[in-house]
Figure 1 (spheres, helix red, strand yellow):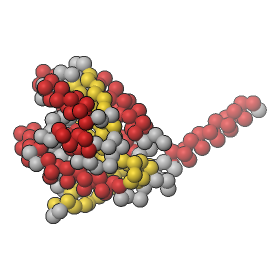
Figure 2 (figure 1 turned 90 degrees about the vertical axis):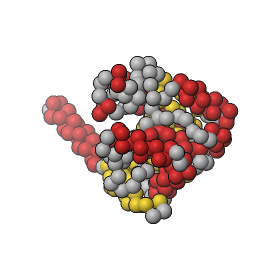
Figure 3 (figure 1 turned 45 degrees about the vertical axis):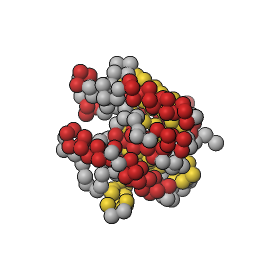
Figure 4 (figure 1 turned 90 degrees about the horizontal axis):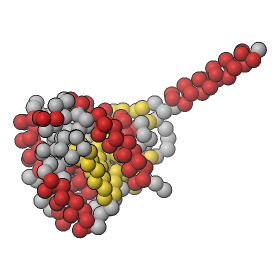
Length: 263
């Protein structure tokens, strides 16, 4: 009899767990929007529910909006946020290789007003969504997306936090850091050959002069693209996946976002 009771109890617990999981189904959909005459397509992800929650805008790496940034959006949504992976280049526009990606990203790096405008267009989509508390938004990005995230903050957008993963930290307008309204964290590969120590020091001085609430985390042994498995496992190329740096930076991000939205 005791065994029967115990089994019934376990069954009830399992049933409740299943019901709880069902009530937190992940909602995902593509969203078409515009910046001027350019059609863009982002990716929205959030857990089903009626309550409004903070939003996290996610900026893609330099090859363009694709599976990687959508995967990150779903991960962020599972943390309890409304995630929107924006599109900088335009609907269906992606680079076929790194050479083409460098040219595409370069166009926006040389026109920071355009970069900021495209990022703000994605911000507006997220802030206006019914599931999102538009007064509580953070932005994050990978590689080129890290640069976009920082530029959105420098533009004065109302963001509670900015997180850059192995991004280019430089800007032609460092004085604009005074416009940053939220916290900043930059995750960096200590052996990244593409983001030179001079750029790191300039970024730190930029944040310091502007009085920004900032953190800089450098991962020993990590190079560029340390969160991207598709980057391979050969650090000698300058870009490679680093499991420890990926996991540790993600864990730190969770705490960072929680702190940004606390209260």
